[in-house]
Amino acid sequence: MENQAKKIIQRLAPRCQICLFSATFNTKVRDFANALVKAKVKIEIPPEKLSLDKLYQFFVRCTGQHSEDLRLQVLDDILSTVTVGQTIIFVHTIETGKKILDLMKKKGHALDLLYGRGMEENKRDDIIDAFRFGRNRTLVSTNVIARGLDVLRVSLVINYDVPMDQEGKPDPETYLHRIGRSARWQNPGLAITFVHDKYSYDKICAIANHFTKEIKSRTPESLKQLDKELRDYGISD
Image 1 (cartoon, rainbow, N blue to C red):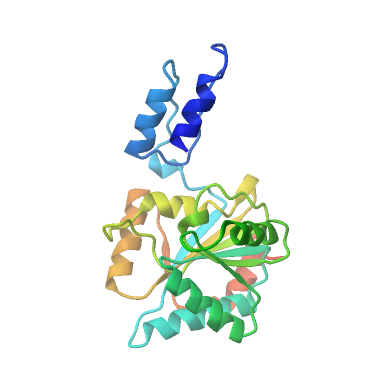
Image 2: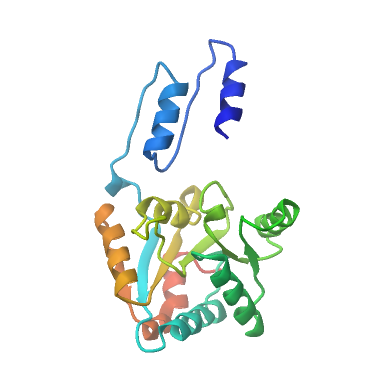
């Protein structure tokens, strides 16, 4: 979008005010913004203030000899027992998304899968529209919609995989954008992250430290009361 933005700005009248907003600004985006906006007022929020008070966060320890099976079982339990507006399940790879889609459909859950590379644009648009207008309430997705999607009724985000960058390091920026799909417009929301081994545990701890935000640990057994807790939070339908 860089070239498109430059072409648009070249056609604007000099008196136009340009404003750029983002939950995060990495170095590349910051350099781009500085090049586009000459006279500027910069307002930055410290990392510890970025997480919304009404966005509840915890991680679930799906550890053990069959951690992958346990993750799928916990996901099935959540989808079977929790009644929320809409849910996004974020995965790291397309292959994981397809596996979840297949297994959860066999369990009787209605959901769609969205990804970028290899999916036709028309099909992506149809899936997003179905989710946006509530025809489908559960969406499995890669990071393709971690930013920019604004659906008011999304009240639950599940990080099936802890977000990480291309080098395999914890990615606080993507985590913030993912969980920010919930709790829109001052509505309460919940973000659940699955931890299945030491590496994913270390990653979620690093992300919590980055935001100086406690992300509490939960056991799969404790989720039996989750629907009641969501009602107490004002999240559950």
